[in-house]
Length: 110
Image 1 (cartoon, rainbow, N blue to C red):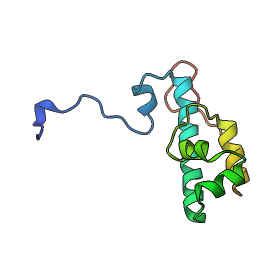
Image 2: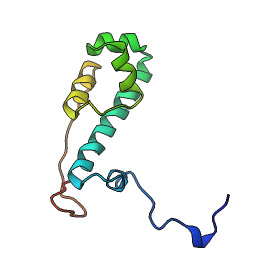
Image 3: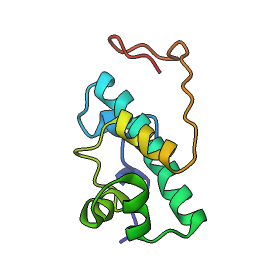
Image 4: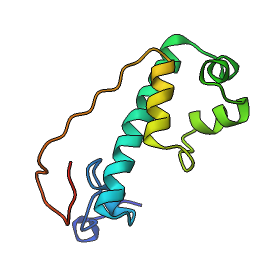
């Protein structure tokens, strides 16, 4: 069904606001954005190298079922430091930059 002009949503989520829109605090959202970026890089790296889940498991020191969950995006039990470690094991270097937030919400730092 097509929506007319009067039925437009009042807010559209963007990559910068998605996590807040899902109910995360600004601080939690900042961490989730970092996790998402690291996870996307991990997925790209695995794809470019043509690795199987078994090969990924051997490189990262984890069992295949955990690899499957990771590659499908289940990051509930995966931290930023763990994703950083995985990327290092896949031959990537992670660098961090810190800048002043363009919009201040509480103590959020982008």
